[in-house]
Image 1 (cartoon, rainbow, N blue to C red):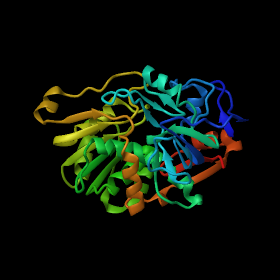
Image 2: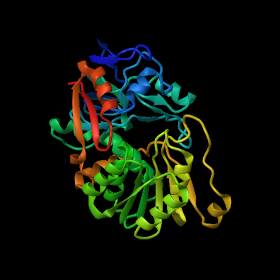
Image 3: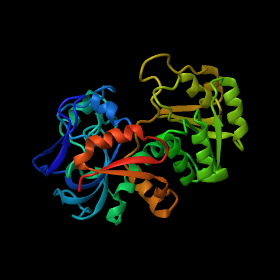
Image 4: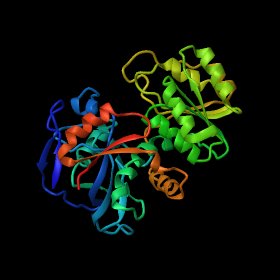
Length: 360
């Protein structure tokens, strides 16, 4: 099979012919039709992000493809089925605290690195091997729509956050950092889940205005100006009622003060989920007042990625029309142009913009 291979961090991807992946029990082989390219893929491949990823490796987290072959323990999947290849691979020998690796991207821990050494190569290839449970059926689609369905990889991240927050239909949600790729998608996800209103914060006023234009009056936006008390007051004024849950999905460059500004806008008994990258470069941690959290019965939890059943639920939201893939603007590259795709993704990131690689 043809594949894009990273031999060393900082080197260009090499387009090579590799042996076809071999099928084992508990695994499936998928013919990859399309795989998204993260906006920060260049930072991963250069080594700037210092992800736990051993080279040489075929990068590429997640894909849309068709089942080529199944192992003897598969009971429902059949060759030809359209599936989402979920990159979130979990160890099977500890259901309470599984190690996690993002296939083709990074390991979450040393245990995840051990897992990654087996489920190593990602989706920038004509075929890939994934755990059976990570090949999630999405139903029949037109082959030309495979690239658009790669948006699952973006939609699932905030969806995992809102599932963790137990967002209910009719509630008011706050998306802190609503102008980036994941944040803007979080707005669409919350609306699709039935939120009465989504309050979206951000510094990019043009992107905030675009959210209102795209989704209408169910979205209220607040431009963050860096003054904690004032920003929080304007958040509360924008919301049509008490804010039930907060999803923080700010990037690493943001400050912990921006996170606290949004968290402390939640109502008593409210829920907060942290999914962003704040603090990854170092610096001050998140400072929250103990008495306020205790007396108001606030729930704060971290969430990395999403539960195993999330992809099936999100496919259902898409099928029903509650989440619309037509929002996404697609730039497609064939496998031979993988390096161009990585460069393009970095230069053309933003709300509802997606770069994909089509190996076939």
